[in-house]
Image 1 (cartoon, helix red, strand yellow):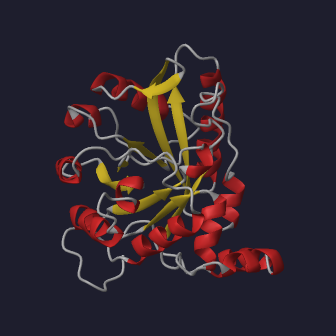
Image 2 (cartoon, rainbow, N blue to C red):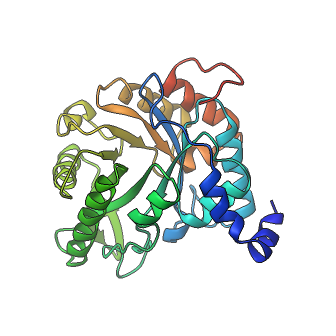
Length: 295
């Protein structure tokens, strides 16, 4: 992996060529479900996992964990920022995988401007040009912060531009508040429902809109708020992983739920066994996954 720097220094064109020649796959397989590994946290100044504020600081370690996850049967793809996805491309880890580009990382964790979540990553044009399958946007809605207006406008534009190119627009909405100079997402059922309705109306077309939603209480009632295909996020891992897996298993029974988008809970499990954690998630999403099978 340390050869990546040499390639970037001497042969940066290999990134462009690699995207052009990458082997692609349909978005959905026969079962219509997806397991996506998320790796766009660092670009938003979010490096922490549980009690370790710098858990994701090593790019080599993160790439090794991602490569392990993407090699496991039942893992359909990855969500990331251009820097991480370009590295994975050079490592040959993206052939036959769904690839979702993270679009807005400008609302840095802990910043005074966190709700003014600028689009600093992928554009819809770049997502289409590189042959990615869609774009993801974090859309936090704070009714007391004027920065929310710009985020909503930019998210709506991104949904429109992705739909024009027949690419997935993965919207991750939250109603949020600022308390003691920290942003907190409201994860009660009613707040989640309100965020879904706001996000569903973004853009000039909803034809390619998917939701990326947290697992919250009363999820069956919450999911009645949308007809959009939905992937559930893993969130910041806390507590017993077995409890997390149980909540995922229950949520995946709902009709609108089409799978999981999980990052730190799979990439940084308490016992360090990335492959085992990923295999459990793959079993939950896809059912029995034969060893050595492709996603």
